[in-house]
Length: 90
Image 1 (cartoon, one colour):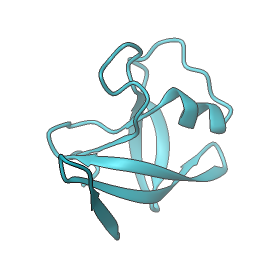
Image 2 (image 1 turned 90 degrees about the vertical axis):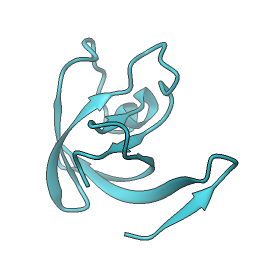
Image 3 (image 1 turned 90 degrees about the horizontal axis):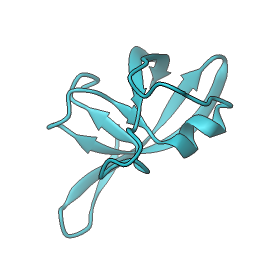
Image 4 (image 1 turned 45 degrees about the vertical axis):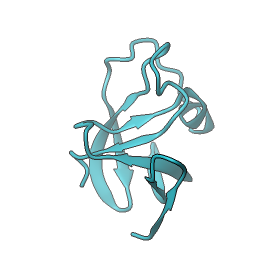
């Protein structure tokens, strides 16, 4: 996986394929080794036609041909509009 280092915080950003329910999209992630879980923003989930009522529900997904589970970025959190790739995936 190739990525770029960006911004004042030198964040690693990469674009990966995500497959949910037979739909495949390119998704931009911030790699966050301090987060154990992977999160998708509400906008990213909407692109897959998903609306999540309970942010604690896991979603089965395939990222870069690797099966994993993801969560919705919690509404009101400091990263609610961001897709985070957590250490569990790495």
